Image (cartoon, rainbow, N blue to C red):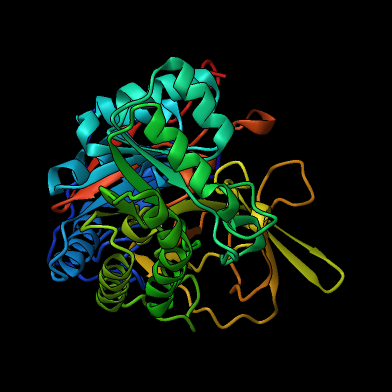
Length: 441
């Protein structure tokens, strides 16, 4: 334990007050709200530590909801629980009017405990067991099946009156190959050749209302892509449904709304994306007599990624020949994306000045450094040859855009306890998940 930087025990009820008018720290994407001192958070809650900004989540939900409401379609955004399933995040979004999108019985349980009713929940899994399907049938109004085999398992359990199928488009798209959800190599969805059989069997089994699900990709920043994806799928599926005389009760366009992770990326124009989807949907539904389906979408990353930061502490530095290493108390067990995908998270480095205030250190580095964690794996790096200034033990590194696929993908590998989560709201902090203890492990 370094002098002046204690790993504080996580308090159960303690709150820290920050003057909302203070403009100390400005991070691109509002990963930490202005006026937030990361050292105060670490001294109170320990490190590593996840921190979320409630107002950022509310603002992004409201913008997305308004964009789709402006289309004139009957729409609803179902938050993708997989992105961040903390109960307080779920409650916050439910209070804003969001539904919930789930992909497992565990996510269904989390949504139900946060107050979402089955009518507010959509469920789209893959390779579902009979237990998965039983939970989804009872827990979600909008159930989208991934295969003909899943339908046969569900039929033995009893089909609901409303049922949809996820159809795999001819091609997929994702920021990384590992998160591409479409195309012939993807494990997701029905092939186009299976569409007529799936809907015909569902109607014969007693399904009264039909849905269609697609996934346009993952972390997409091009607004026009979403309308193209909807148009392409409806042009392929529409004639098959029309041949069966079926209309759609709902179209679930999936998610894939991206956020910038690099300085050279632009924010997604959600207004243009919503307008493009609405135009494509109206034209294709009219052309193929598919009715006027309700439009669902599944934003996850877009709503919560920019709200979150992972705060980590510099614990050691090392030099080997011309190479410089900076080691943190967070690693791949805290934030998996860099090791899993090769993803990069922007970050800021903070030190204390002579008066004890938090000061952002310039990113102009005398030499590149490898930013790594304490896990005994060669892949435990946040970034190789990062533009890091000279740092000292006790300085803080704040990773941006960590609110989505951060804590939910964490683990206790190497006996490293999962970090706590804190919510910042109206200038106050609230502990929303305690740090995992060694006793828990």
